[in-house]
Length: 158
Image 1 (cartoon, rainbow, N blue to C red):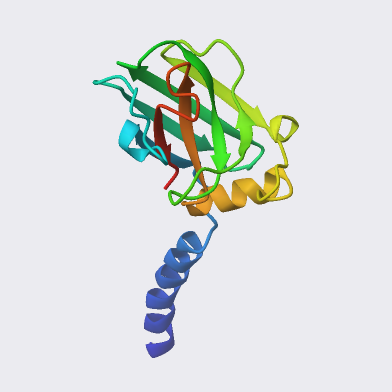
Image 2: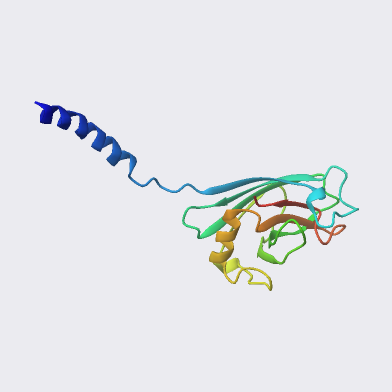
């Protein structure tokens, strides 16, 4: 009788454990960013008075691409360049993932290993950069204008 009761209790416990131990599919890593002139290093004195923007950086679970959705307003002029830089908030870093035209708001870009620029001071390849980017604090998104050639608005990927 005791063995039967033990079996009655152990079977459901084993089934629950088996269900909970199955691997769950990885979710994409998503960063929601607010771009601001104050985040530029150094800030551009000629930035638009109401310059602002948002960026959503998504790294799918296969790590084979980075998807960036950007919206902005109030800049000093048209966006002349936009990209992801390698680096931290402490200083400007090299461009590693440039975004091609058009750059009118809003825009969405998908970049892959073929787009990666292995710049001096950056990780040696796309896979290494994506690993660092997913950890946070290893890159930033910014937008450039004629008035603010080094960058008008920026946000750290973290």
